[in-house]
Image (tube, rainbow, N blue to C red; front, side, top):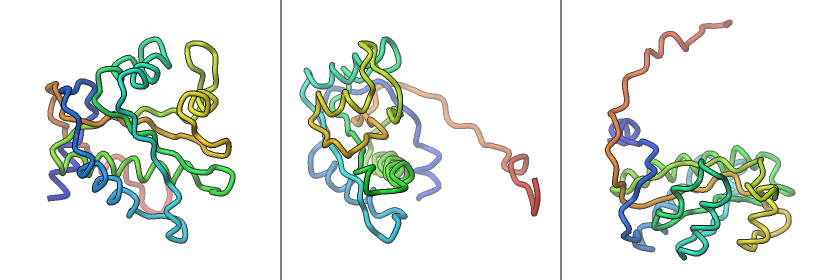
Length: 172
């Protein structure tokens, strides 16, 4: 089953307008923080965005790369306290990956928008934007925005990867 979920997971940028149930989202998030975590600390937290005005703010962060977020039924900001969590990027990245897999298992689709560093089209650093627009605490950093919902686009099946060309024994 996990093999099929991994093969089925694709980045989807078009969604049907129906909002996923909060029960399903809570289950996905609960499972997503069960991945590897330093000292089982589970420091990752989330902001769930569903209001159209706020989805548009996320969409307008960039001129092109984030515009599709305004049509997503929901986005999840994945973050942690970067001042107290030394490996905050890894913690958030693992959780973000698990969200994608758990979403597929629940018949939903996602994408991953990396917002670790960069500036919005109006010149604000991403992290300042999240603090100002979404109340993210001062010491927290957002790694990803994950739109989530029922996908409304067809994508090609993933091709198998020749893993042997990527494996090196003992030395590169």
